[in-house]
Length: 318
Image 1: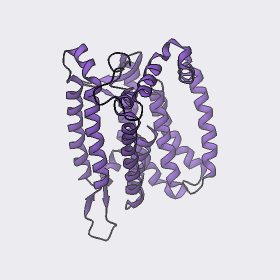
Image 2: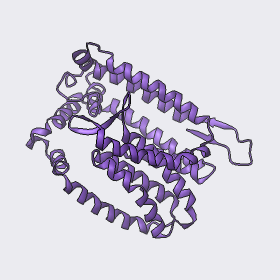
Image 3: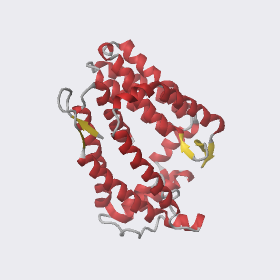
Image 4: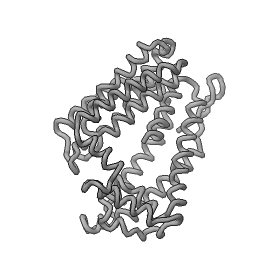
């Protein structure tokens, strides 16, 4: 998250303090809310109410250190790693399908001494790879075949990730569309791309019955046994009202909302902090996305702009 003076000036790097402030507030709020949400689960499963907080603090510390190391680098060095990172993402995605760990019916995790989501690495690799490819063919990208060729390059990893994690595959494809859109002067092509994308999505959803079932549950959770989690989340949001029950006072996190500290944490934010608290969290994310846009628009070259825009697209779609 660094902005940089234009070439020919002093080339002095400076941090985007608005972005850092929003990020710090999000991290702090995330840790506080995680502790509130996960204490009951940690006590029941591991006899330690701070179990999930400790893991998250460890990961956060590594993330902050990696952020400052990356910020001190010249980002042009990353172009060398674009293709190797993409090939590694494809191999890791294949490994997940072959030897991945299954959790709650989904095979998404890979254990290499520690467990991680291979699809999270894939998102970063795709941003780097596309930034490199689009920069290389920037002067020809208005040709439909060049643009389609660039998008086809990310289909292998999107397909492999999508086999076990449809939402992440959609994010990867969305990042691709955003990066190509930024570099392309023609907008008409994106209508065709949208039509083709919708066609692919329809076929992909129809291939597995559970994907269509998920959409049906989302539309009408009361009619399905599997709608339990969605309904409990809605009860949590509704009972929070405008100002919430107060931090730590959620009832739904006491075993009613499955995976309360994971996928469903936003429903507990709404229950404890209310509409205003949840709105504040969303506002912080919007500030973060806005600063990505500013950094991308001020980048000294297209490669830098595309990396920042890729990070923005990742946050925005997710």
